[in-house]
Image (cartoon, rainbow, N blue to C red; front, side, top):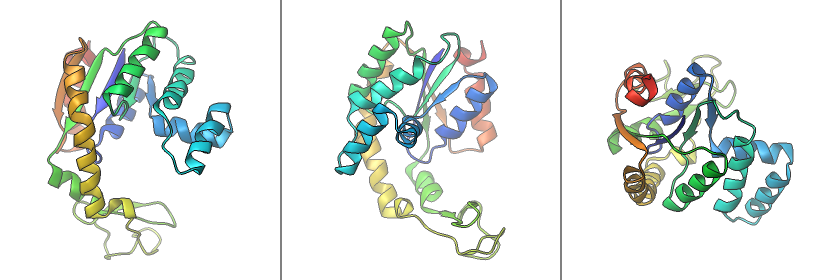
Length: 217
């Protein structure tokens, strides 16, 4: 089975994707991870991608899809594949459909994880990370014992530029612009389409995800 997980930044779809893939011994596919691995390993596709990035350009969809095709070709056809946050546009969805068709597969299930913008903004803008030990906190949901300091090692916590409230709001706007057409695309694609409310504890969200008829069978 091939699953596509959609949802805005901060909704927790990556956590759900990893957990389901681990339970079913499937493959968790994140194009960001594929791109970083290809660049790190210096593969031909990785070198091409690095060239675009060095020039300050976005990596073209065609190259991303080549990475996906290369990765999927190494995965047994009977293993579950869980796409995390890809595709992001209808053009990418078309491309993914072509790649899967070439491998004798298709998207079987699309799950949209949803949460109110204000919840997502708190999850992302409240995030603080420790540059020393890697610990992660959230000033709203999981604050450190001493504001601004890591409980583990005492280092000063960092607030990433990407996690600033204004930046987070813009990321959510871009997501809405890109994903509204994609939701309509998949709702009319013939694949099963489900929605899950994700502004709840991780365990509750996963229980609903795991109980979907297409996953539970």
